Image 1 (cartoon, rainbow, N blue to C red):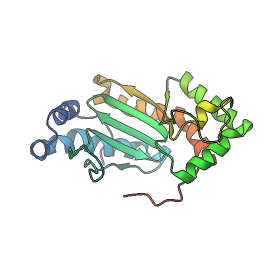
Image 2: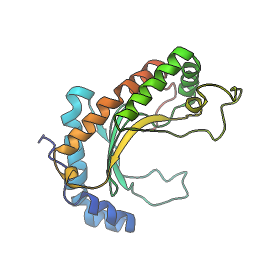
Image 3: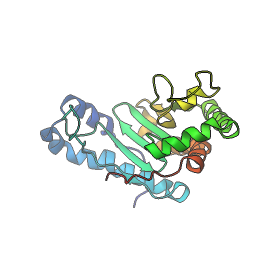
Image 4: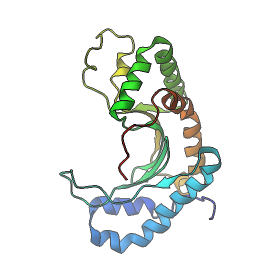
Length: 213
């Protein structure tokens, strides 16, 4: 497989068009652009990063609309993942992230138990602070209030409210997106995210629930 040399010149334009016309007709007419400028480069990107981060996979481009009011058939981004790391290209540019986008109930229980512990919870806070110092943003769905039974004055209430936790960085479309520098951006983010993902792996671990394929 050829080494990653950047996403194709038409990648952003492809997703701009899909945002305007998310239809089977548009997809069929522009499928070749998706394969050449988006999916092919994403496969090459993951292959280049595999020696350090493990084998990756590209998400399917089709949306699961069974339980959604939005019936548009195609995702407006292309995501590649090497759990717990993620990369994405879209009309908004390039995104790289590491962490748990959403925790299953058993994972969430373990997460809150670990955060409630002072030593482990403050260790996570320190790792997140270091990630922010490198330019990453802390994200993840949070509760509007607090977990049931939690002291409103808990020193790590902000962390306990998380239902998902990840760190990420996004770059708007630029010339780097279309060259090997995009791989370097993703690699730097994944490396900077590793202390956080290692904490999550150690204290949250895999879900006991089967993953939907």
